[in-house]
View 1 (tube, rainbow, N blue to C red):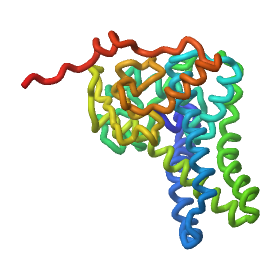
View 2 (view 1 turned 135 degrees about the vertical axis):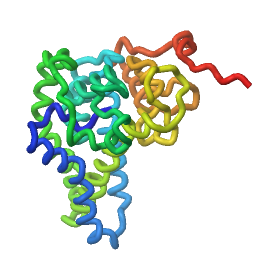
View 3 (view 1 turned 90 degrees about the horizontal axis):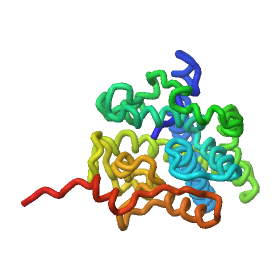
View 4 (view 1 turned 60 degrees about the horizontal axis):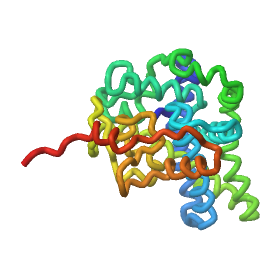
Length: 296
């Protein structure tokens, strides 16, 4: 996965400054404000707001940005496309078009020269260092289909607005439900700053951890791995070896007992008639790429 979208940011040095704000801003804000609020603890209200936003916005990225727009693992009707692109924009990970271009470039050059976040240059480069010196990724080459979509072009241009909205929502809900500015600021911290910080590092862990450690049940020709411990937080994205083996599959947790909430929601959308042509590997496809166990 790719975040934030370097292709959508201005050239150096302004790009480096904006990238630093996106990468370190939540950590700085957290460190600067947590002392004053720590004695009050985190309220159940903040946890609920933060948890709901984590799930809703996170699935906007995993289902919308990733599985729908980047890999076309299913078709969505126009309202669903707009909703998913809008929710993904609230992740503070970049506009949808640049995000998709970066991710498709990653799949075209996985763990090789040209990969925007190859772990060959080091774990921390893959995790977040690449965003400070990203390669130039051609949007016209890697996301031409999105450029002709009028809805997606508008949502992409409105990404700065989404960055404000993603903080305004928890602040507003905290004020509405708590009734005080202190409650609003507490929700802004926990359901805004902390939530985005956690979501970013889980996203970046797919680039770093899931290309460095874990299981490789399928032959892929790259270093992608499955990391079960990240499955819940990543909403199913950490079954990354399976994803690279079957990049156009709407389901990444392809084996039994591999939780994948993103795939489960896509199945519900399919049953509702909002998602069609959903792509999943069959048993024969799985067997063809499965790595044979070592002989005793």
